[in-house]
Every structure is written in structure tokens, then in C-alpha cells.
Length: 106
Image 1 (cartoon, rainbow, N blue to C red):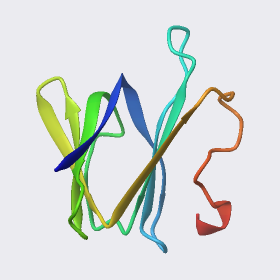
Image 2 (image 1 turned 90 degrees about the vertical axis):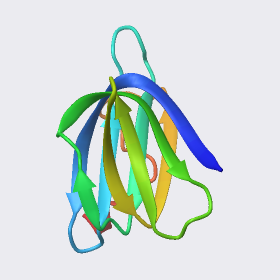
Image 3 (image 1 turned 60 degrees about the vertical axis):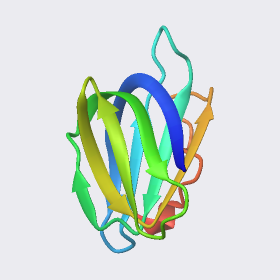
Image 4 (image 1 turned 90 degrees about the horizontal axis):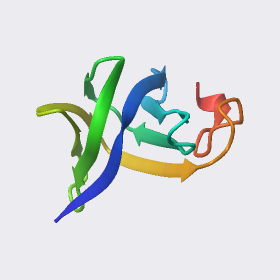
């Protein structure tokens, strides 16, 4: 079975921490969509993503320990190989602290 997160917005690499192999991606609020979506990937082994891109949806397998997370973008599929994925959507301001993020890990 596969999990899916529908975005339909620009997603960008926000932060990568080499020491803990953590990648943070962020869809920032816009005039049309006030939501902010944070995606945290842990145990990152490989990254094939542009720094910013329109992302229709994110999909990943439910049961595998070592996951390939797919980022679907206008017919192109980018990916990140990681051990875990977490996401949270909120309506906080652009400058508010990001959920899911422990600043000491970066």
C-alpha cells in the first residue's frame, strides 16, 4: 500500500543536516494558499531533487523500512531515499518556527 500527500504547490529544499542525515522541505504560504507544509525526511541516503519545484503530490510505501519517497512534478518524478518521512501542515506565519524540527540537529 502507498501513502500520498497532495500538495499542488511549489516545494523547496529548506535545510539539510549532514550529521543526522535529515532533509527539510517546505511549501511556503502564498496569497492563494495560506497553508505552510513542512516535510521532514530522516535517515536520508540519496537525494534527486531540484532546489525548488512545483509538486503535485508526494508518495511513499507504507511498509518498507528503507523508503523511496517520490515527488511528482508535472509528469516528472523526483525522489529521496530515506528511512522515515513526517509531514505537518499549518497556517502559521512564514517566519514562525517550523514544526517537526529540532534546531539542535542542524
